Image (cartoon, rainbow, N blue to C red; front, side):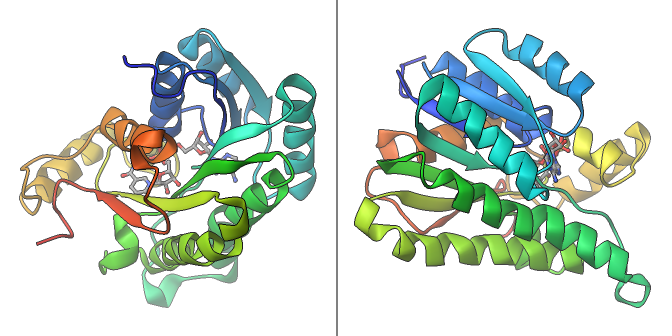
Length: 251
Ligand code: NAD
């Protein structure tokens, strides 16, 4: 590793599995100290062990504003401020238009949109001027994935937040960018989407046919791109959506 994040303090929401956990591992390998969050204490404790060093786990739901206050109080107490915020926590489930319920909408938008908004807003007093904020959007915001419209719409909001907040934070030189993973099998496919291991394999195979690189991605491939957006390597990049999708939505 090349110590791209040496001495930096980072907060990564949803750091207990998948892309968030892979990002926490990469950040620590690059020299950062990371605070990771997750809703379940047991999974959080396991993730802290997997990251191994330079990590604190703080339990909380990003859709719960009191949990966010508690998160940032602890970060303030332990480190004083934040260089990098990765607002990664999120998820979705399938429902075709005719079957969308109020509960499905509220759960998706509370977790993805409201949660991300207040994750960032409440971090602002601790964010260093010149810091970097990375928001996890999704390729699903830019294609019409079947039975996934509420999730796609929630992630379109995330992409839009990156534009608006880049402007809102310009006086502080804080860069805000969105990252849009393509198809990246993670624990979320089993938990959030409710797929069995066999269904994930079949889905990955089916999707690979439409991906120019001929395969699905790995959480670490997304983590590497997040390191880029978090580090000085992207010092003149703000407000963008970086697609990390093997070319799926680009051709
Ligand atoms: P994952 O389920 O493996 O990880 C998501 C993490 O976020 C978990 O730690 C989960 O507990 C946490 N989380 C979810 N809702 C939360 C909440 N309200 N409060 C606190 N923590 C919460 O899934 P993943 O695939 O690693 O997803 C990470 C992000 O990437 C999500 O925002 C997801 O929508 C996005 N994404 C994933 C893919 C993909 O193919 N994996 C593609 C595009 C976008």
